[in-house]
Structure formats: C-alpha cells, structure tokens
View (cartoon, rainbow, N blue to C red):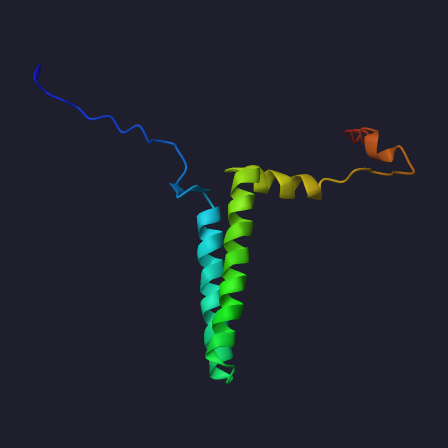
Amino acid sequence: MAGSVYQINKGINRSIEFKGLKAQYIWYLGGGLLCLLILFAVMYILGVSQYICMGIVLLSGSGLVYKIYGMSNRYGEHGLMKELAKRSVPKLIKTNSRKVFIKPEQSKQQ
C-alpha cells in the first residue's frame, strides 16, 4: 500500500471548454452549423448556384462563429442565462389596493 500512486483528476466540477468556447456555447455553435448545412442543402436543391450557396453559408458561418465566441467571452459560463433571467424581472409592480399585503383573517372555529 505504501508504494501505490494515485492520479488526481483536477477537472472535477469544471465546465466543458473547447478551443475557448465555454459550456452551452459549444452546443449553440454546433446547432448553428447544422442549420447552415441544412440551408446549403435546401438552396442547392432549389437550384441556386453552388458558388452563391457557398458564399452565403460561409459568410453566415463566419458571422455565427464571431457572434458565439463574442457571447462566450462576454457572458461566460452562466452569464447568458443570468442576463435572460434579468430581463424577465419586472422593473415596477403596480397595485391599487393594500389587499395583497394584508394577512387573510383566520376562519373562526365553530
């Protein structure tokens, strides 16, 4: 037992990272690229020139990669979810009565 060597996995509880993309942004990029592949196939089947299809898909793909990497760097692992949650919180709640804040009376026991 004294001669045993144990390797430590130092990546426990860390999020997935691939070439600078963090966590869910890998999935967003994969989904976007899949959509661009389908777009290329549809345009090619409809008879659009192959070079026009490639140009549109390459420009859209470049924009997609640029945008996804920008969001990954700006928001980080959980920041995008926090930003979306922050937008859904109302800035103001209006009420015309105080009924909401008054504790309901206990029913009288018979």
